[in-house]
Image (cartoon, rainbow, N blue to C red; front, side, top):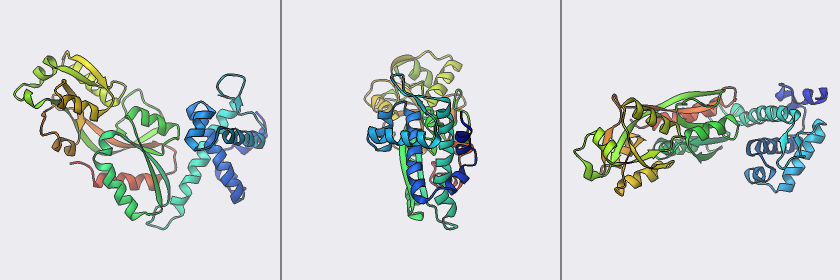
Length: 317
């Protein structure tokens, strides 16, 4: 690798930005975002969809970076592009530069006003409880703050935060194995509950779980792993009839009389399930922490702190 490349991609990301004029910064940032997207998605075509460019424009961005750094960033001899050693270093530095740039608007805003862009991921229970009110409050207080929201399971969202695709994510507290280099701030807690058709009132938790078809929460999800461990600890043998990754779908299946399940629920969720038989799961009842997950070294402190405080304000009790 050339000394020129190492110099251009050094840890002094702020110096690199300072030496460019405004037009060069805008173009270079778009190219760096494109590079990050290719590394994340594994192909030029999927990266083009992510950054809303044509595939030819994506190719031009990479060509411009390779000319600027005087190095090949991808091995194009294979069916899919593979990062070279220089490419891996470029992606690492690109994430640092883009993160630094995205934090500038927040840092130079007024003492109380937040600016910039915040890409948030959130699990389903957060989307259905605290997050909408929290975002509405942030939008009213900080009209120049741009927020994008994506939904998903905790494990998936954590991976996207680690890759830089999301700035922060509202997930459950990480369960091993989980991505490294992430830190979490506790927002609130949720309990795990057994839910069954209303006609099952009067049965205890063992009868519910062992006599009815069991609709399992996807074990790829952190919640699913927690449920599975507790079932083993209680020595409960369930009759799995289906395994789903959507909590709404699970609740609908139970409401239709197709079986029993265990799901994490907030107090708002519980209020909406009065037509079902609901019992605490575990002895004592299992709970999970809902947290704000972010990269340990990502400079978004003000934005992340504001989001955390807004969610806590509207958190279920």
